[in-house]
Image 1: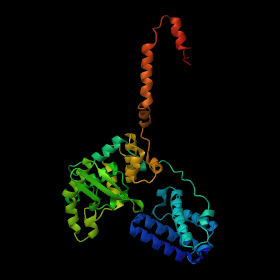
Image 2 (image 1 turned 180 degrees about the vertical axis):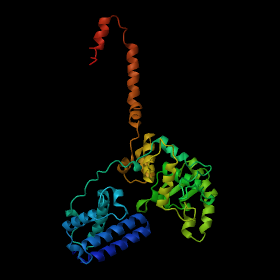
Image 3 (image 1 turned 90 degrees about the horizontal axis):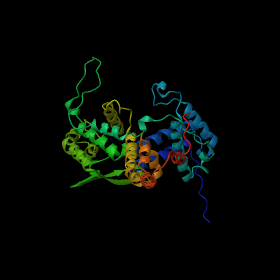
Image 4 (image 1 turned 90 degrees about the vertical axis):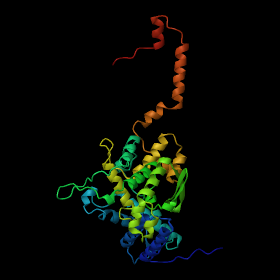
Length: 387
């Protein structure tokens, strides 16, 4: 018989340090995104403070975890300088559940490393359900709204700046900040291919295989997994316009930055574009949309838009899941938002609807002509009441 593994009694602080070291390794290997690694580091550091850094980790119980979660929820959310912006004191249920996921992952690692005899999360209270309102900014755009958004980045003169300086006079954008080719490519990639914003920000020029008649993008997704998608001819043209017309000028501004020389998307200063810059770019494009279509939208909303419009056009969900990088079509199902009028159009185009129409037409041609009022009344049945 194999002897059971011996328990390694470590303090909460020591366990947190060892765990976060493994998180950093996973981030370097590409298993975790930098944003996810920062989130784990922030949450586990806070957990160590709440449990007590010098406490033995194996002594933590499910009740201790519940107490830490309650204290975490009641403490101020440091992301908001003005607590009134969030609508309530403390942290939201969604934020607490995200913190709980980080804690669960930490204790799973601790059980595997024999820092605890049993995972205390199995005795903690179940997570609270999130009952927030509809998050409009993350829902799919209609086809017409998506087209309107894409038209805001059409090649042409750069629109005037909306920001008004303190003096009151409008300031025209600087010529070296004219980034229309880049912005058009970003919006087009988000709408047509639906990548995660992190996947787009960390894309390199070398990830694109540009061959005559075909351009392919090798996307590095979550967990280091990869998928290859082909660009449509218009999308490939937008990529070529940016790579040959704008990117060389941007890259020349930081020719000593190795990461910038690899990056696909660059800022006007020549640095790699990050996820916040992509979100800001999208927000500016939304502001230029026609008023009937304008509403808050995030890059994740455009990912929903890709999935929803493709399924509405009749594409198989499995194909859409492969495009988005989902391992399960159940995940893709969450991304499918209902577009107004889509349900009625689906019913009208149902294959059996056409069969019913042909049957009705056949019956009308074969039915014998009506002879008298009595026969017509008998076939029609009782007259409906006006009341």
